[in-house]
Image 1 (tube, rainbow, N blue to C red):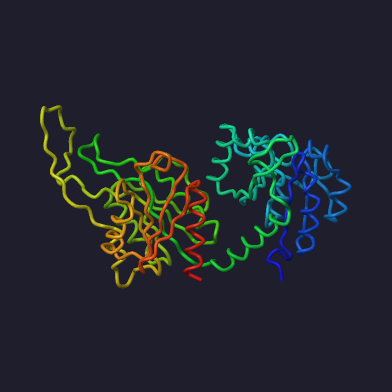
Image 2 (image 1 turned 135 degrees about the vertical axis):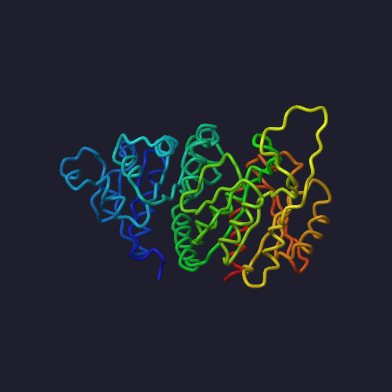
Amino acid sequence: MSELKNKKVLLIITGGIAAYKSLELIRILKKKGSLIKTILSKNAHKFVTPLSVGSLSQEKVYSDLFDPASEAEMDHISLSRWADIILIAPATANTLSKISNATADDLASTVLLAADKEFFIVPAMNVRMWENVSNKNNVDVLKNMGHEFIGPDIGDMACGEYGEGKMTEPPEIVKYLEEKFKELKKNNGLKALVTAGPTKEFIDPVRYITNKSSGKQGYEIANSLRRSGFNTTLISGPTQLNPIKGVNTININSAKEMFDAVIENLPVDVAIFSAAVADFKVKDVSETKIKNKENYNLSLEKNIDILKHVSNHNSLRPKLVLGFAAETNDIIENSKKKINEKNCDWLIANDVSNQEIGFDSDFNEVSILYKNGEIEKISKGKKSVIANKIVKKIVSYLD
């Protein structure tokens, strides 16, 4: 039986040439046993008709925000509450901009603004539009809000150009949704803990020791775990990143605060320690601002090793413990030593001296070292893609 049987799908069709694919999408979803209601934007009418959409969905087609008959039932509220799945296919660049900026100027955008759940977004646009900086910013905002993107694919486009921006084919969209709900059912009840970002070790009330960690990879892992059905807690050092909807985020400053938060949130099934925790702290923190001096000596002492402590904890140790190794040289050799010293199950190593995949980059390239001595490389990709690959391996391990 399909995971989509009896699932209530609200399909929002917006105005792009790929809108014709929505008809096949409706047909496949109906075959899987889904219940479908549809909204057509004003421009979507130029590509598909309400008659064809309604004939396939066997339901009323909604379009007009100011339809007196419909708004008596407050469709912009009731439609979003009715749905188990809100699917926007195709989603144009204009639609992404509306959602990310809380614009509500038609029924589709008003329903999305009033929704109390995440969306599955299937983008479709020209490659230059997809790569536009403003569009990418909108995509990042929507991902941080917890919405999930299916595609876009790379291929030939209706405009004659080739590149990323092509709408994912309907069978692949349905397959993605089926796998998603299957995974959610399987992972329901599993708990995950992620640490991310840097820590601050204060010297005095205005100065501190820190590092360049952006927290991006840890946030992406936390978001991927959440999307996979894990009850996820993120313990974050100070970053410039937005909170992730659906993830329990605990903000800390120092390594001691991070350690206390970790211990307080154990036990879990899996713990991923991606934070760049300061190895040392100031022994005697000044209560007042230190005045300008020609010379000043700081006395440092070791911070507690959070990864090592949890990896060796008899009663609170998770089933799977992952550490991170941010290295600048001899990446694999240094990481081999670290996995043995820390006693974690997996160690994810990356080269932070490479600016293309370093702390502030949106890209990464990692090697996973396993306790049995095996090493697996994950080639360069967006940190969100790297996160998804790591989480898939976690799910497989815990299965």
